[in-house]
Image 1 (cartoon, rainbow, N blue to C red):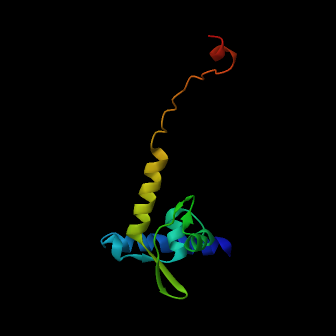
Image 2 (image 1 turned 180 degrees about the horizontal axis):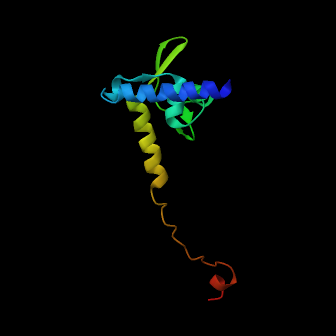
Image 3 (image 1 turned 90 degrees about the horizontal axis):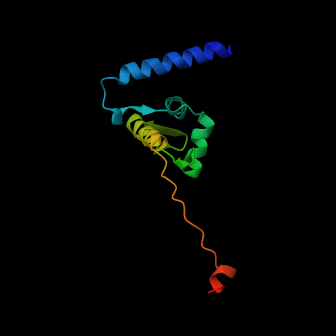
Length: 111
C-alpha cells in the first residue's frame, strides 16, 4: 500500500512538472507536500518552517496562506530559495588567517 502511494505521489510530481513546463513559475502554486518534494524535505519540516521562519538553518521560503488550512508555495520562490542554498553551499570557505601570538609575560618586562 505504501509503495502504491509513493508511486502515485511520484507520478503526480511528474504531472505537475510537465504541466508547469510552459507556465511562468510564479503562477505555479504547490501544496506543502509538493513543495517539500521539490526541496527534498518532509511536509512536517515545511510546516515547522512556516511556524519558525527557518528551514535547514536558513530563512524559510515564502508561502501563501489562502485560508486557515490552505497554504501554497510559488514554484519560483522555491527555486530561488534552492538556488541561494546551493550557491551558499558551493561557495569556497573564507581562508583563515593566522595571527602570531604576542607574549606579554616575562619577555615583555625583561627590557
